[in-house]
Amino acid sequence: MDLRAIKYFIEVVDAGGFAKASEKVHLTQPALSKAVRQLEESLDLQLIERGKRGVSLRLSPAGEVVYRHGLALLAARDDMLGELDAMRSLKSGRLKFGLAPLGSAELFAPVIARFRSLYPKIDMQLLVRGGIEQTTALRKGEIELATGITALGSEFEGLRIRRDPMVVVLPRQHFLAHRRELALHELADTAHILFEPEYALHQLVVDACEQSGFTPMDVTRVSHPDFGIALVAAGTGAMVLPSYIAERHAVAGVVSVPLKETDLHWELSLFWRRGQPLSFAAEAMIALVKERLGGL
Image (cartoon, rainbow, N blue to C red):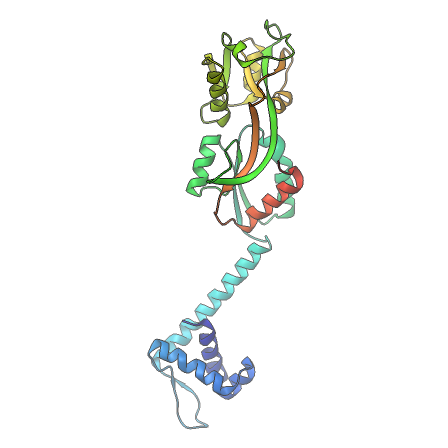
């Protein structure tokens, strides 16, 4: 059904005839009459009872139904266009943003604050989740954007925000703490502090250890880097962390020793499902991240 034809029909009814309506819609009377007749043909109903010239226009019972619902349809169209325009201009809308617990606060808090100041009408929901949960939430459509460690490829696309080497955080009194750098296999007999398995960094470190010939022993699991480093300071074990995170959460009593392994890095990305249409709010966030944090 052509909404334009319905609009012409309503204009004819409101004007009381084709002649006055044609002046209002800037359409010739024959063209206007043809449009209304085509609407009748598409519905297989007569909407206007056509009589002699000079006789006031009368609607059939079907015409009254079309007129009433036509007004509602046109009003709904106007509401839809108005809402889309508000979303396009970022005066309304919603953004569900999944943030990795590791690194997101330090890197993304200023960006999020700037986004809120630029677009205060956007309803932004920030969901802090581990890397495994992030990808699951994206697949389910529960969030639009996510941060974390993930492979960009056929399923996800995005921006590499930061790439850091890894260090070993050790108690200052540890026998390896004086070294300028360490190979991962040298930690085979040292107790380890790891993030919980839902963190992508957990599997990254475990895989690297196994490739170096050992499985981490006497593992203590944590959910926050500051608590993990506090445990290191207390002598609980060693913790492999991105250098950026180790520096941000450093405390007295620990040292950070660079790893020799050049292929073990922490790569934080902003990512989303490949081929998935994004909201105007999500597009605006991506643009702001590019502006403020760039991309690798």
